[in-house]
Image 1 (spheres, rainbow, N blue to C red):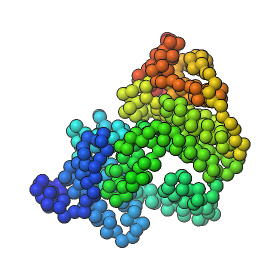
Image 2 (image 1 turned 60 degrees about the vertical axis):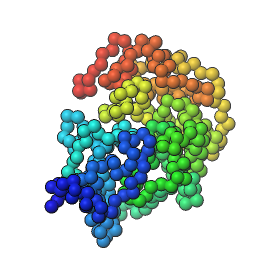
Image 3 (image 1 turned 180 degrees about the vertical axis):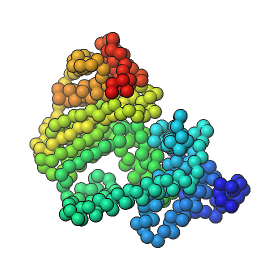
Image 4 (image 1 turned 45 degrees about the vertical axis):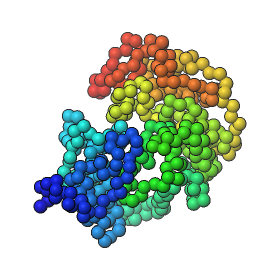
Amino acid sequence: MGLDDADNTAISRLLEQLPLPANVRLPANSDVQHYHDLFSPRQLAALAVIREAIDDIPNRYARSAIRLAWSAALTKINRTFLSAEGRAESRGGSSIFSIYRYKVAAKPVELPPWPTFYERAQNVLAAKEEIDREIDYRKRTGGFSGKFEVYHDDIDALRDQIKPVDYIFTDPPYGGHISYIDLSILWNAWNGTLPSFKDRQRELIVGGDLNLSEDVYVKRLDQSIRTCFALLKPKHWLSVVFQHWSTAYFDAILTAAAEVGGDLRAAISQIGDPVWSMHKKKGKQSVLAGELILTFLKTDKPKTVDANKPFDVEAAIVRILDETSNGTVYGEYLLNRVVVEAWQSGALGSLNINRTDFADMVARQGWSYDDKAHQWRHAGIMSVPLLGRL
């Protein structure tokens, strides 16, 4: 009898015989208290059966590859899976990717475990074939002959492990938006890789289940940027991806960079993703989307930073709005411009603006927020659907 046909009693007996992950306690903002509650008994049994078979694969490379497929299936075979409205049941994902907590679906969708895993396994095999073709091509053409190294460590520890590098691209957590370690329990519990309390304390976020403080976040963000420059060769580049309403966070990044010789050479806003997050859809103008990419050149010429000069935020907003050519602007772009101009004016440290005041200032200039396009639009400018522009 297969799992699909087994009754609850049979599944309960099977669970007693299977190697299951630790039933650890989940973060306080979860819909359920313990890890096993994230799964129906049938889901838990199916995942354990497949995982046990994978662990018996003798070749460690094949075992790791198929375990990757199993990990991808895990995100769909649990009670946090939210099916996308108006699409096939399988088109969706776990609430940890959209709501950023363990929210159990009001009407859980139980996808068939084996077909779900099989589909993911086929994707891994296709990727393996593509990589093999690329390796073969490189060998035959005498192409890339370097090496690729992966380090899983705190950046402070890397200073003793690697030599200075040519380029760094880093995307630090944006304050308290996502509690990465808390949400990684979904995989870490099965893999037996739950982080220690010490590691959890060092996570670069605000809040989380440990309620990490903003002061510690700012200090660690500052130190991490300084360490990045220590790991960078002179006359080479560092790019930092960031987005937040708190100008203190931007100040920590920019001041740390300047004080160790990082010269800001570019600040590029990337906004307008056609797939908006659930938070953006609900929060509209108060929720930031996209990101600001700050790129620095390591000059080895440290600067003393005085960032407490006065700054007229509303005047800057008026000036930037006047520069728009089509009567529309993303609020994120507008905020990013204000932040960069305040920094260049030596005033970022004194800049203190919240999302409500920001929206009021824009509205006073005759602009209104378009909930569908997620843009600010000047009075008299009509919203044009994307397809209408093609």
